[in-house]
Image (cartoon, rainbow, N blue to C red; front, side):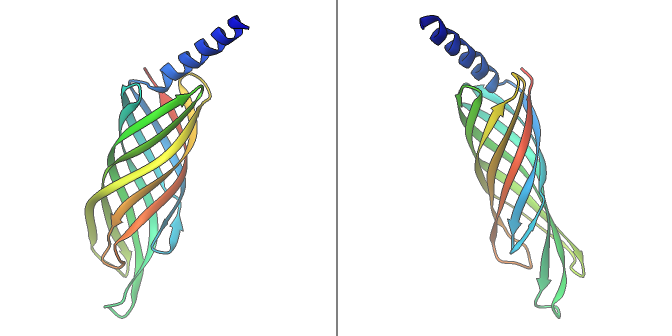
Length: 174
């Protein structure tokens, strides 16, 4: 019995060691909601585990295209292409091959208008989220997450939050 417990502890420890990689990168896609519309966001992320329980992550999200109406210009319509660059702290805890994490930081968003709408908007605000990953191998994890990008303000909508529910795949290098 003691040998079995020792073997399980060693397997859990070795898997956890790879979960806090010095360098990782991956891709994400899913569903986002903004201004009463939904679209498919896609993004990439890179990061490093600076300590066993906290890392730094950055990346880019193409949030999608969202319908807009200019009520001041004869109800001209079009859409906004939304994207964000972000940087965040990422605390995590490893439970065997599963990593649970949160992230919080800043994002710089940009909205480019298409159709009958012209111009663009940009700004900076906070972002945060939670997620879980399962390590398929020592170097590859798959998971799911939720993110909120606060304060995505466009000329044709109120100050809104953008929510994303995504799946991801991440390669852990070192």
